[in-house]
Image 1 (tube, rainbow, N blue to C red):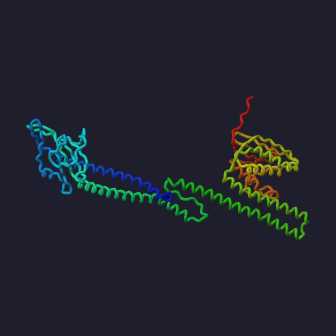
Image 2 (cartoon, helix red, strand yellow):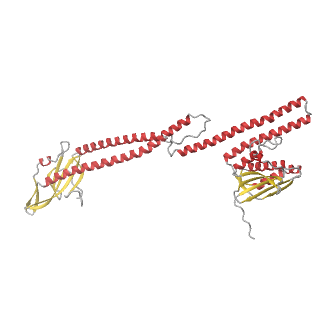
Image 3 (cartoon, rainbow, N blue to C red):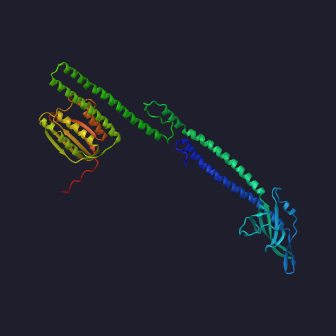
Length: 478
């Protein structure tokens, strides 16, 4: 058996959540009202039975026969006519002594088996019970009636029974009236709840219609002024998601545009070089060298464009782990040792352990870009130092070269895509890639010239600071 799925509609959930508890409460209230009304009916008719029993008790007398006292009853049926509501119910009686000996009335009326309540609702020795008499359900009142005359005194039991047709009919009438009133109440509550729910959920319907009518590329924020306060967090989250999606799409469009623009130039140069080689304008050896240089530049550019795309992917996934940056710096210094030796550079390396949260590939690319630029700009037989230090909660990598430095104007745009100091030896994406990676890892990158006290330019320092993941080690006691 499968239950209906109500989670698809907010209106259904609201209506069921409101109306079902109300309906259950009204149902319980109906049962309670019916029982109270029935109790009131029984109380009223029981009072009539008690009055009948008292009227019969007042007609009783006693007679002494030697040592015995005998109850006498001369009760005409007309004594009960005054208490009969109409001809839909019948009344009968039975008078007996305390020992159960019949005196007058219907002998087959069921005998009383109960006890007189200690604190009853009436100022009389009376009890009420239900029984069967001649195939009909009856309500019986039993009254213990004291009888005192000059001839003697005794106690009589007076039973008055009434069939239940009139009581049941009145109870059904009360039940029907109660059900009608409660059904009307449920109908009114349902209409009110329906109007309120429709009014409350109408802004959500308008929001859904607005989203359905939007163009696929429309990522403008959704309006939140007319929305309920409970829905605004959802719309705010949706707006935030669309803003991130818009940023990702802009990044993708910019990447495709820049890639198409930058790759077009080396491919055009490559085609011209091939045509020149075919015509024999350039010696074969020189032509092959030119082709190799152009292919290398195109390959470097393609790899760097792919690196930019990979940075965005890692920024979204946040697939970072704890990495010891010092191991990566040492590995890259060893990897680039041939380039250092080729320019006869005086190379210095000083690394302290520094664990940062990041991706090993990103840390390698950051370090590789800074080292490659420093080696390229350091003059032959110059000085190049690489320092990795932990300062408070940050790990700082300083790459200090002895090159020609950069001008203030170039420093302002050097981190922009395709900005380079020498268009013949680079694509202008290395520092852009490094900056994007550093910002993704929550760090900072700076470029600053070093000058002597006399104002002479000594070189350039490239610094990268990234947050550490473990507290610094305590110094050993002296």
